Image (tube, rainbow, N blue to C red; front, side, top):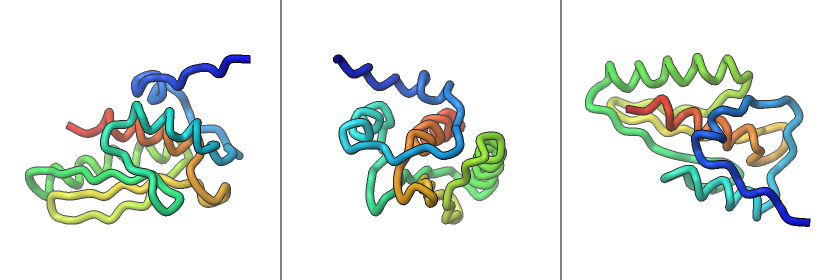
Length: 113
């Protein structure tokens, strides 16, 4: 039986998170990372750094991200600095990266300028 190809970034972003998502097998995670530019898998999480010209734009991004995360009921870890936000997606209950984290990573990319 053939496996379905991973969706592109826009198709991934169009999905919604679901409770109880299981860990992604390594091959499935690799497929999804291929459509998530600059996201890295490390220490059971997806991580990407976003840079901004000033604090105002940094916080505007954080506020948009917080709204999206609340709508998905899935929340990232966010070290926030002047001109920089590091976004970490991980599903703590599952002990690593799930489809929910990939969905939210794709949605996060859509928020960035």
